[in-house]
Each structure stands twice: as C-alpha cells, then as structure tokens.
Length: 155
Image (cartoon, rainbow, N blue to C red):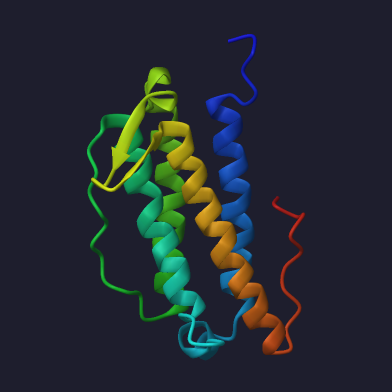
C-alpha cells in the first residue's frame, strides 16, 4: 500500500465534504424554488439532489458486494423530507464505507448492468455526478440572485 494515493477513509472524507457542501446548497434555496425553479429545461435542484442520494448508497453497496439495486423511494415533497433522506444517506455512507472489502476498490465490475469500471472509478463517478449537479444548482442560485455556498468550504 506504499503507493496508495488515497486510502478508503480519505476517499470517504472527501465525498462527505462534498455532501456537506451540497447540503448547504439545499438549504440555500427558497423552498418553492428548490422544487420548481430550473434554467434551460434542466431539472429543479430538489430532483438533482434526490438523484444524488438515490445513487450514493446503491453505488457503494454495489462496489462492496456486487449487488446493484436502485433506491426506489418517492420524490421528497418538502425540504425537510429531502434533508431527512440526505442525512440518512450520509450516516449510512459513514457506517457502510469501512465495510467495503479492500480488493473491491481495484476490482472491475459492471454497475447496474451498464457501466463497467473499477470500484474506485464508480465511487468517483458518484462524487463527480454530485459535483456536476451542484454546479447546476450554483447557476440556479445565481439566477435567483442568491450567492451560492463557497465551493472550497466543505467543512
């Protein structure tokens, strides 16, 4: 492991930093706009955030066990409900990430029967997807005249 760039624990810390930032984005939106506002035909931020949390645990569980099941919970209807799902997922990531067998990070696998990559590549994809959609949220907030949370602050 002397040539390891990131440990699994460091990768989880990095991901959770992004999740803390995305949570602040959820809080920055006025409730109505969180669920209704969009630009250029893109989905409202609540839908994007829902995709993020629905993707997180199934990806982690797939990497860990090669069992790939989409989360099927309904779309939240309030910010409070969205944050309940978000926080539950965050807690579950902390609990389940350390249980991933170390060899699964380097193993090649096919996520959801569609995307072939290594375990770490699929986890990075889930993080990249969150960053991508949070950037859309940044555009939305600016269009609403709201300064987005600071990107470098992931505490």
